[in-house]
Image (cartoon, rainbow, N blue to C red; front, side, top):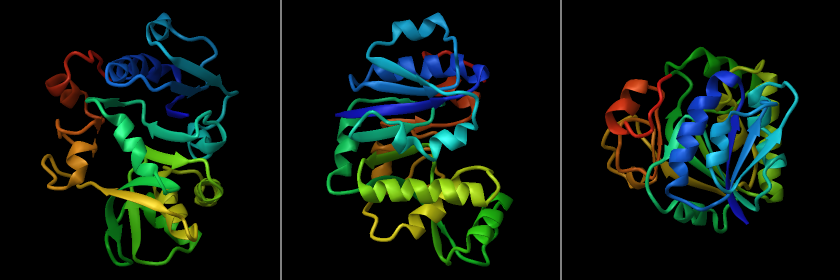
Length: 234
């Protein structure tokens, strides 16, 4: 069975998650599974069909994210950040990209040893003793099959995140992708651009690309401009 999971930790993100996930429901009938620490949920969740919840005791949300293969009830899973939306039909077609692959990742660049990079990346790469060059990926959108290699990948991701001192999880994601041998990765490319001339235009966008099926952006101003019907502020 295929499905989509979201991690919703912290009451301050619940209303936003209800609105983005309800909006996403317009474009797919795939089951949604919510990993959360919320013991009591707002009534708005009841308006979203085909949705289930798995509640955890207080724990770091990134501990759950870096081990989500253990918590997904699906054979093939898409993980989407709860401040992203499915904006168009055919997310099912994205899942099909996992055929004959263990993991689906969105690559947005490659770091060489002497490139400037954020401290989280510097610290994580140093503590995990990676090799340069290293490919880097978005953590907002990940697909995976439940295979032995995928399990090893998530083990590496969690281990690298803990080794680095539990900062942001994206640097550790790069470590895991590099360190899991024989991992079959389906890579889609993405650039920090409004009009990236590649296949990601129709799949995933980080910035203001209204062509993408899955759109992710932190700016409430962007949401107001392009998706006023979602109707939330951060």
